[in-house]
Image (spheres, rainbow, N blue to C red):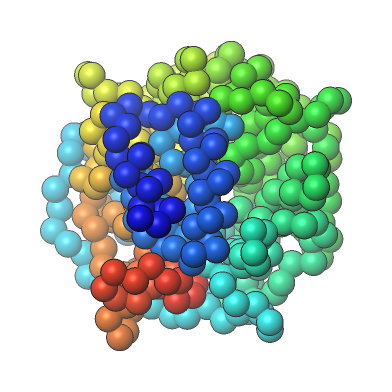
Amino acid sequence: MNDEQELRDRLRAIEVPASRIEIDGLVRAGRRRAFRRRSVAGAGGVALATALLLTAPSILTTAGARPDAAPAATGPTGAGTTAAASPAPCQPSELPLPAGRGDVTAAGVDPTGRYVVGNEVVGQDFRPVLWTDGKPQALPVRGRSVEVTAVNAAGVAVGLVEDGRQEYVFRYQQGAATRLRTPPGNWHVYPRPAINAAGDVVINAEPSGNSGGEDSVVLLWRAGSTEAVKLPLPDGANAFDITDDGIIVGALYRDGVASAAYAWDQRGKGRKLTAPAGETAAGYAAQGDWATGGLWPSRSAALWNLRTGALKRLTTDGAGDAVNASGWVVAAGVLLRDGAAVELRIPGGQTGLAVAVSDTGLVVGLARPGGDSAENSGPRVWRC
């Protein structure tokens, strides 16, 4: 049994959102082993594809524990479980790689579809890549391991640096990388930074040596600032995304386990996101009026309308990892448009796995050979 299969089986055995302690250990050890094996296999709960492991802490809970395109369609607005006819397949294109780069996969896309971010794995470390209008650039960010996780419509990218015992968030803007400072003391930041249109960056942090989010805080760097602000959110609050109007989407944790999905303003006022009776929810991504995440024990994706509060349970086995302004969701490597899975075609019998989707309908992800192969065949985009 390979590392990804073992991780997949362990996650499938979990009937409620896994504890942050367990996921932290699984993800930190497992995602690097998975990259070394070039694995892109799917998993229960959320996709454990290589590309999705770049955003691996969205697996069930925290781990402290987004060229041209066609116009987007109008997203779903009702509540209940989706049941729609399969949309027309999307058309693929390869993303070229920077010279000398090999095992690369896409990790995110900005809302316009102009900027795509991804990472190469070298041994146990990451090397960041930024595509602008389809042209690749190896980002000159210093550090033993540098992982880029998100980019906004202005081309400002954010990610994580691990360099010996140092671990911190960076911002890459106009050709220069800047370290974003945490409050005094030693902090472990997790799972990955998110950025909105203005350039505000948000992530969770816990004191180094703690685990499971013990004594964690939510940090915000306002656009252009390098000094973090601790947001006055409730104890146990963890943030996973920030909308363009500054709403923080995430989950509230009790004893290391998610108890409810939430949307908070930056003064700490929160709204619990709807969950069906008998289910627990966590929110992982947001864009425009929409947020997505997961429901347990059903292990299904959730789509919330942040304006109306309506919930739609999506018919897939895995939490939502990404969403666009039309309510299209990426869950377990599958693109869901109006609640129906969209075929991501690749010539030659290969399989396409989605990672993120822009507001213009550009899907980014990766290809793998057909059959049971888990090899990464490289980053792809689809125009939907």
